[in-house]
Length: 315
Image (cartoon, rainbow, N blue to C red; front, side):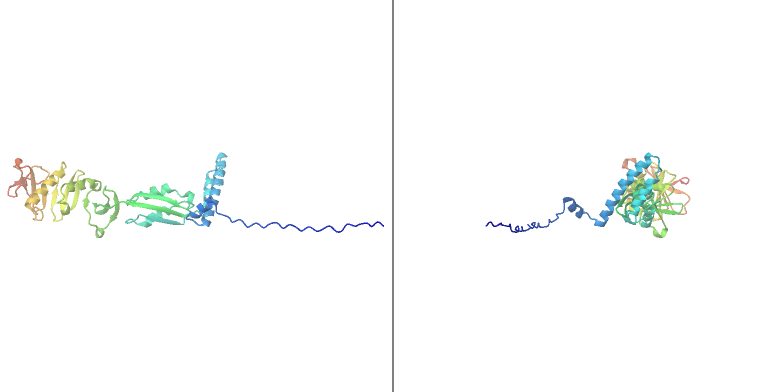
């Protein structure tokens, strides 16, 4: 008897589980490491990136607008948008100021039609600052995102200029720095007269010729835009010639060294005549002259006893 064999159920296959892979550790790229070294926050970096993209788009839009004749105000609008994105002047950093009023620097830096960083005119700020007497030079720069940096190089006061009753500090070249009052008068040389400030270099050279007299000179008057009168601390006035004033001053220094002319009650010494020293006391109408009759002694100090009455009065 034939028996039919029925096939049994097919064996079930086990599902193969996929092997689990260890998660990859993300290593920072060279660019990421470089960004991490930047001295700015991630938020600021994102703002810079945003503004950079806006700037590129804005520049492209401005180029198209210019091509089609749209007014340049479109560029200003783009710059204002950049300012609203956070790039707007909110602080001023001033360095180098020692004597001038720093508020003047702040006022100039903030005097802008717009405080959006792209619209701040750095050259105009510098030009305005250079109009101040104290400012020899100025450096103006942006520090993103919101600060202007101003570095001032000041002039140094070298003398006091007196003219028409007004006292003004000047530098070594005669540049006016600042008006001052008599109570603020510093221990500096004083030059007197119209235009005397611009003669400050020649005045320094004059005193350099006779350094022994330098601490004894109180002031110098520039006369007729051509020559100097020196006023000493002891009250006397020394009238110097227009030609070779340094040579005359050296000769007077030799005379004073030999005969102690200063502090002896004389009112005026006149050396405009190279052959003699004319002197006058207070109250005298006539002047006395020390006449040089010894040309062989190579400008030796002239003795006070060799004095003659000078006719007339020299101005």
